Image (tube, rainbow, N blue to C red; front, side, top):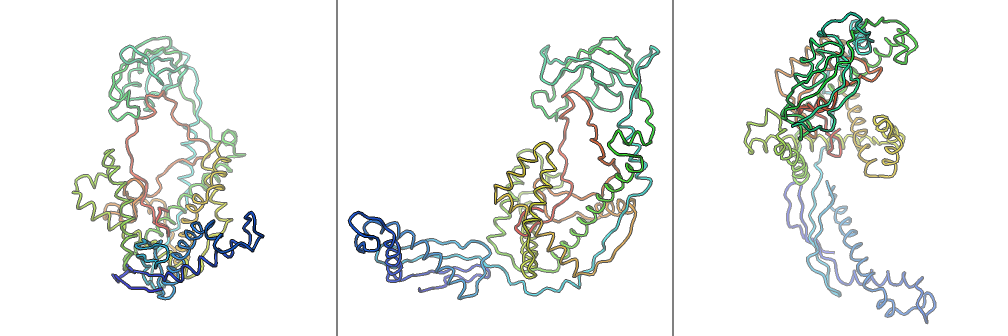
Length: 503
């Protein structure tokens, strides 16, 4: 084999490789001999078939097989001899080959950078420890009580007012034609709760049980159903009953309606969930801060083709966001040149951090076990109630899907390893301090970590909210309200994993 290096541009190496015809023919003859040991050809005993017959019968197939293995083996030999570590699959292009002649091909190799040994002990970080307060527990309990409160019929005839619950039947029409999702029976609507499209509830204030009326509304321009967006509609309503909410007593009986044995057990469940949310947030926070420091500290060159590929994936997302007019507000006023520079920098950071974490994992023999992948599969299944079995079967039968679960697990192991080596200061703070600091940081600087699949966004501390001890009780409104959805930014910018995917 003769090798001529035609390009030595940093992490890109190009070679012209020539494999002697004699070597190829020798490999073909050897392979034909192997085939002849088991070949069943009329008129010949196994192992006694003449070479000329074998060549006539199997020559073309064997030649193709040998060419493929020759390309593979010679490439591996070249890389090993020169100590080259490819960052991706080498590109091979056969430039010349005819039977009986030398095989010539061009080989393009993109190399991994030499990261070397890294001392993470110089990195210093703060790890926040946040615990739910009694006040938060009480507030969450009260929200649960409000969401699950009962109501009673208003016995004395009077007009409906804010806070009342009206029970109605309705039929919605546009241009005197009914539409899908515009009909409801025995619908309970809490006035002032903003359950329906704008203007609907306002027109029910002042009504009485037994009254019929037409409610005139206009669907929002950004309404989720295109056929209804911006359209004027008339809902013919019959007020069947007027009710008023009753206070919910916070006791063991209330807890039992939510599936807990006592009020104390309910409080414990709420505390556990809130503490878990804070723990996940502070974990994400220290991870982002670590990646920020790693990105600033380690500035090795990244493979250009890998960078190009990552940028193209990101840019496809930006182009799609442009078409749908869902581009981040901060990006809408920028020129294409500015956007390309901005997102190429993000792509470079992604690739560099991915390579760094991969290097840490490999250097320290971090691996992902099948048990860990199975656990991740079960977590995914739990996120899709009613479809658990289908989710499990999908991942179990799809190696590529399983690999997509391995990447974030591997990344977390590499991050955990670095955190163990770094100097991490534990800091106990209150939820209020956490929110205040997060809001202050969001105002002071833009988070420039990796972008998620939609668009970059700032990470916010968990807001005060109810624990999902019971389904949140989505507003029971007709389809008109179901899609008054405006685009929201992704909650945070996810860290990039070792295989260049979002965590």
